[in-house]
Image (cartoon, one colour):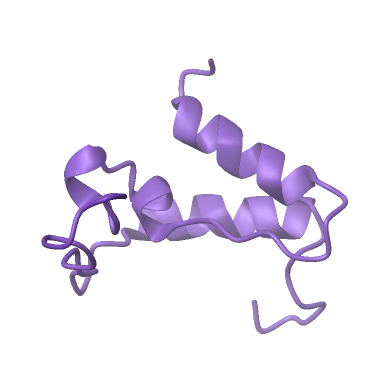
Length: 81
């Protein structure tokens, strides 16, 4: 496990895969714990209540994600990004 944490190791692994698409839960990008789960299997209540809060994605996290998406060829080829 890297100093960044296992969630960033798994994000890096997903982005570096040969899959056409890599889907990364925003909870992982933000480094949130199990309190931010979207779904609790075999339960009827309490699912799908977590919400993304405005400004939760810091500039530092956005830049880290930007670097990784460019590194692994998952960002559009454009100077706008």
